[in-house]
Length: 81
Image (tube, rainbow, N blue to C red; front, side, top):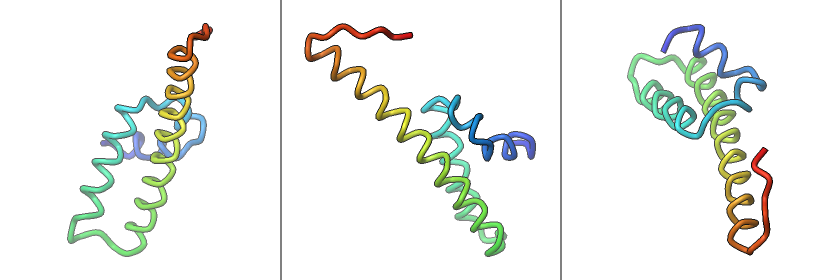
């Protein structure tokens, strides 16, 4: 992942447009970096903070999808727009 990609992930607007799959990939990469032996304490805090933001964004996305599914399975109609 390039520095530009890392930088854009911290933007709230970019987090809102993040797919679940993209979020999981970023989280996987973050865990890998945090597991490394050559990461400083300061950098690990930055990675952790970024990971928590991505995790919240992914969780919010999953919650929205879950609510849509509940509406559909309860016999209601849902406008997917």
